[in-house]
Structure formats: structure tokens, C-alpha cells
Image (cartoon, rainbow, N blue to C red; front, side):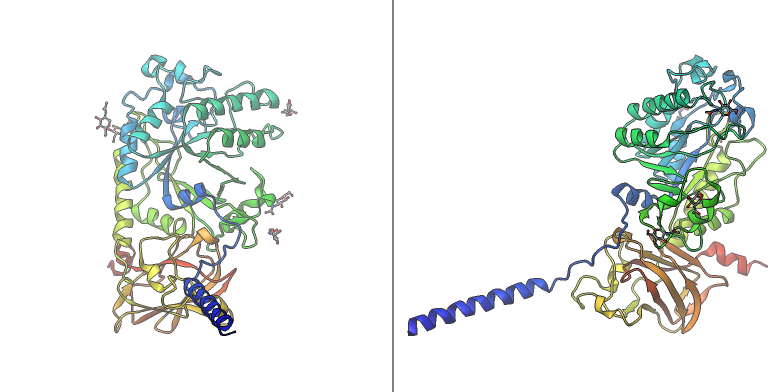
Length: 490
Ligand SMILES: *[C@@H]1O[C@H](CO)[C@@H](O)[C@H](O)[C@H]1NC(C)=O
Ligand SMILES: *[C@@H]1O[C@H](CO)[C@@H](O)[C@H](O)[C@H]1NC(C)=O
Ligand SMILES: *[C@@H]1O[C@H](CO)[C@@H](O)[C@H](O)[C@H]1NC(C)=O
Ligand SMILES: *[C@@H]1O[C@H](CO)[C@@H](O)[C@H](O)[C@H]1NC(C)=O
Ligand SMILES: *[C@@H]1O[C@H](CO)[C@@H](O)[C@H](O)[C@H]1NC(C)=O
């Protein structure tokens, strides 16, 4: 009997010990569940690029026009000093990791020797018809470690097949295959819905085209009014909505529709598709290079940055090569100034090494979801999140300086979008005074303050409404000297 008791006792002890060990292991809390929809791997990679480059180049460059008629004589295309290495260098020096080239614009002239038309570099004077701009572009970019993208205009004002739906769609698809089979690792392809105003009955077989693109390229993002991977922002000024969701309903979108621009601009908190917005704008007034035009001022580019990248989008900035075949010195210079200004503003985070207090944190002090995660360099997978059972109460973050020692004019907040976009409403207070009522955050939200520099003791960010518990991957307080100078100028 005693033996039986003893073994029972031992068994119980082991069982308890086992439970104890499990509960020890269980003390490391798991990340919270995602809130769908989520980005794909390629969409996440795209989002982190922040600024990408468009290059509009073709016969329009030589005819000094924006929209060619399709009647241009191909012999006018003669960029005698073409040097795509210079393009790639300009991009690399400006921190740009993806360049998109207009392989064909509305005029129908092809920058590569397509076997399906003579209206291309084959019929130009350039390199006696033996040249290939797309090839040189891809090679130079790849050498610099820059990714490439392609624009192949659906509207073709030259080709006689345009207007015969079957023949033209076959032609378009043939060219798409030519480009996407030859070059692996094309990271973005750009589609617009522009059509001849006199031939609005023309149909583009987008489903066939998109299926073919996905078949030929594994990590490509397809851009169009309706995605499927990246959506247009709804304007060509580089401006996203003050509220901007990466989520939207694709079923409410159709390419070229005029009723969707507002919806594209803001997205949809109830959207069932992850389809983030890209803001396209040119560094100059026009998309093609014109001798008479010059680049935008640095302050205008910074405005665009705050309203695109600072509103959860990627900025697609067009920098057009000139008739020599080079990016003009003043454009290259402005672009480098732009990059250097962004670095100047954001290299120093005034919130760093400050006391950051939060409403609560998942799993307690040792849980791995503390406020320190908002100040490290991982802006995706390392984040602060409050206790989930804290639902009734406000979630908030406070950054403490000493008396008035937080001096800044820009506030940066980033969500851990890998687990879904969540925040719908928040408010920012400086020393108890409300200064910003915000809506969406997303990958990156920048608030450049309306007035001059703030000197604060404490900055409080209060999350009022969200689709789930907030997951904040990064916060920053920054000083923008370019903005500050507007208030100090005589
Ligand atoms: C092309 O441009 C690069 C970078 O600006 C320069 O180093 C190179 O010498 C140029 N190549 C030619 C053939 O001019
Ligand atoms: C579009 O309409 C024009 C004029 O009515 C006609 O000639 C043409 O064949 C039509 N094209 C298509 C693709 O239906
Ligand atoms: C635009 O109009 C189309 C056709 O009427 C409709 O199906 C779609 O839902 C509308 N989209 C938006 C965002 O209003
Ligand atoms: C988007 O889809 C969701 C889910 O079906 C729906 O609740 C929401 O109302 C839709 N948004 C719009 C603008 O129709
Ligand atoms: C194109 O840009 C290059 C580099 O700045 C410059 O040397 C060349 O003169 C420019 N060509 C024209 C036609 O302006």
C-alpha cells in the first residue's frame, strides 16, 4: 500500500513539474493574430522602397511633345550620348532602388527592337538601327543593384491593329511576352487605361495580360487603377488622401473608370484587398524632357514627399532623360538635394534615448512587445503593442523630455503593417494640448506641424479607434530645417 502511495505521489509530482515547465514556456507571449487583408511579400518589399523613379523617354523627347501622334518619323530618335549608367548612378546616389522605363508610350514607338513592328529603334538613326534602349537600361540598373520596371502603353496611336480588338490584344500580348521573357526579375509593370478618345469602344484584355505577366514573373507587382498589386492614387500631383488605407475593394474598381478617383485616393477601412497606392508625379511640369522646362523647387518636392510617403504611399517620381540621352544636370542635382534633405530631416530621432511610457504592454515587461521596439531600426516586425484585454481603456504612448527639451516640427508614426493596417483615429497632444487629430497611419505617417518648432516636455499619442489592438513599429520626433526656415525668413 505504501509503495502504491509512493508511486502515486511521485507521479503527481512529475505531473505538476511538467505543468510548471509548460507554464514557464507559455510566459513568452506570441504575437497577436493578423487582421486581414495582409500584404504579399512583393508588396511589402515595394512599400519599403518609399521613392522609385519613372523615366519617360522616346520620340516625344525629340519632338518636344507630351503625347505623340504616332506619325513621328522614327529617324528623329537619336540620343547620341545615351548612357544608361549615368541614369543608374543618378538613381543610386539618390537612394532609389527601382527604375521604371517607358518601353512604349502612347505614340507606339518601341525602345527595343521588337520583332512585331518596325516602329522602333530599328528604324531610328541611333546606333544605325542596331541599338536597344531597354537592354542597356536593364543592364546598367542591374549592374548598380537597382531593380527595373516597365511601362508598355496599352494605347498605341501608331499601330494599325489598334481598333481591331483581337489583332491588337494579340500584338500587345506578344510584346509583353517579348519583354518579360527576356528580362527576369522585373519588379513592377505599369498599366494605364488611356484610350483614343474617338475609340472608346476599344477593349483591352487586361485579364489575359495580367495572367501572362504573373506567369512569366514571380516577384512582379502589377500597377493599374485596379491593381492587382499596386493601385493608382487617383491624381498625378503625387498627393494621397489625408486618410489613406492600403485596403480597398477591388470589385468597386475598374481601369479607366472616372468615378473611382476619390475612392483610390483614400482607400477603404472595410476593403477586402490589400492594394496600396502609388503616387506618380514628374520632377518637371511635363513627363517628357523639354528644353524650356526646369525641375520643381526642393520645397515643392518635400511637400510631395510629406503627402505621399508621409501618407502611407510610395512616391513614383519621373525624371526624364534629355535628347542627348542623359538625365539633365539640374534634374540630377535637384534629386540629390531632395535625398540629402530627407536624410538631414530624418537621420536624427529626437525621441531616441528618451523615456517612453505606454498604457500597457503585451505579456508584461519581459514580453518582448515593449516601447523600445518603436525606437529600433526594424520598422516592420518589431513593434510595441498593448495588452489585448485592455480593450475598454485608451491605448497611448508618451515621450518624455525634460522641461521643453523636445524640440521638433515633424512627428513620424509607423504601424507594423505585416499584421494588417489598423489605426482609424488618433490624437496627438503636446504638453496636454491637442495639436493633431489623425485618421490612418499605415506603413508611415508624417505630420509636419502647421506652425513653427515646438518645445515640449511631453508628447502623447492617443489611439482612439482601430480595427484591432495597435501595433506601432516606429515613432520619431524630427526637426525639418527646410520647413523651419519658412518661419524664420525675414
Ligand atoms: C557613362 O556614365 C558614367 C557615369 O556617369 C561614366 O562613368 C562613363 O564614363 C560614361 N560612359 C561613357 C561611354 O561615356
Ligand atoms: C469602334 O467603333 C468604330 C466606329 O463606330 C468602328 O469602326 C470600330 O470597328 C469599333 N471598334 C471595335 C473594337 O469595336
Ligand atoms: C463606379 O461605377 C461602377 C459602375 O457603375 C460601379 O460598379 C462601381 O462600384 C463604382 N465605384 C465606385 C468606387 O464608386
Ligand atoms: C467593401 O467591402 C466590404 C466587405 O464586403 C463592405 O463591408 C464595404 O461596405 C465595401 N465598401 C464599399 C465602399 O462598398
Ligand atoms: C543633357 O544632360 C547632360 C548632362 O547634364 C548635358 O551634358 C547635355 O548637354 C544635356 N543635353 C541637352 C540637349 O540639354
